[in-house]
Image (tube, rainbow, N blue to C red; front, side, top):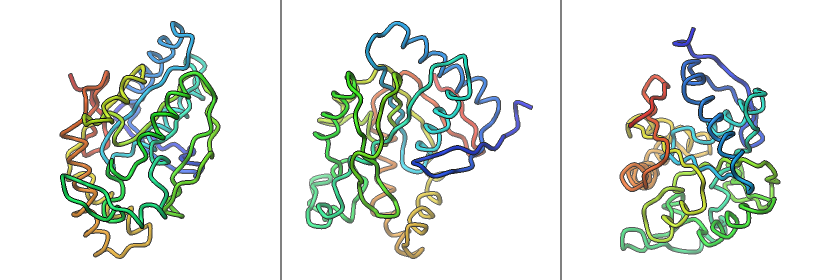
Length: 250
């Protein structure tokens, strides 16, 4: 049935996960998206770069890895490779020792980790530019280490999907990133939906519920608002509903 969710097992950041998606979304949104990217690549000699942007807690990493999984399972579309933005955080040692200016206020980076000011934007731009024409080694963010690990993924596919909060951020420096992508996707969500997800993520990372809630109020909630209110228009805009269903907007 198209209106039923089906569970899938696949790899996200080298970890096996189980996630559920509506069959209707797979047939009406995800597979047509992969078909479109396949058609776009046929008319392009260089690598096709795709951005998937959304706020924290939406499930970007899981969805992008699921799209990679779908592309491998279907003979009708070209295989894609999914990678993430989070490996471009500054290293934890740097974050612990430095401050960032956020909304005109200088604050310890460790208190706002995850906001754009805690990413190495120049390093990201350089890597994306190289990725357009060459295979590269891509960094990851290891949640068990709370730190970046360099050169963990060899990117070789002709269609590459990069997911991250800030890929379409409409702010100085960041907005230039869109010039390097061939197709962009943005997922909207109601902010209340992701609050519990983000708090639980911090608890799983070792924080108490009280500290996890404080971090959400001080950092994550602001990041969610910043993404939702200050992102560039995308080629495809989706909305994630409370029941886990996606709809196409516009």
